[in-house]
Image (cartoon, rainbow, N blue to C red):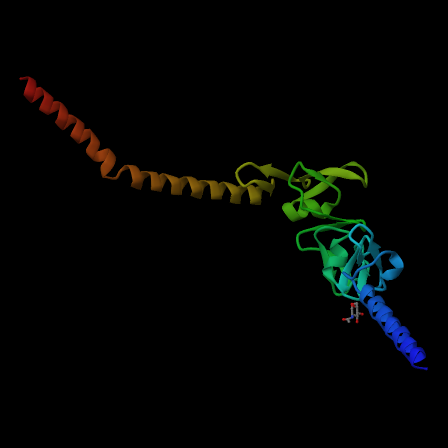
Length: 215
Ligand SMILES: *[C@@H]1O[C@H](CO)[C@@H](O)[C@H](O)[C@H]1NC(C)=O
């Protein structure tokens, strides 16, 4: 009678211990020997470390849930879900999108802006770097290089595409004129200052000193 109740208690405690350890193993970061030991959503057993982790291309939301990675345009709850699939992307209003200053390319890439002459895959890549440029495709719909729009030319001075029509050209020349005039005035003020005016005097004075000595 006594031994039977002791047995019952020990069976019960073992059962409770098993349940508790099973519940613990279910959490992310909990110990495991095999995948079935991990109960968190989208988790698996990292057999090397014997710890429950999120499956590849999923991210930890909390100790009981891993969220799947999401491509551009697909639904998300956290930035990490987007970023694990597409660098420089994030979760915006529940959908994965490229970060500011990046251009979405298909579902899997956020492109950085492209400078003139650089390789481009989307028009927007060029216009982000220079509004008056576009992607001139070398292989249609595949890739090209950023160039100035038709009727615009690259200005070495302004380092961007500028219009070649008269109005823009004249304003460009006006700017050049103002720049040169300003430079001229500055040059006058700097070099007409004491330095250059006094130096010839002092040289002559020295010379005359020499002469007076030699005489
Ligand atoms: C864990 O995250 C999931 C997904 O965001 C959510 O549905 C769940 O309620 C969270 N659980 C806890 C305990 O915070």
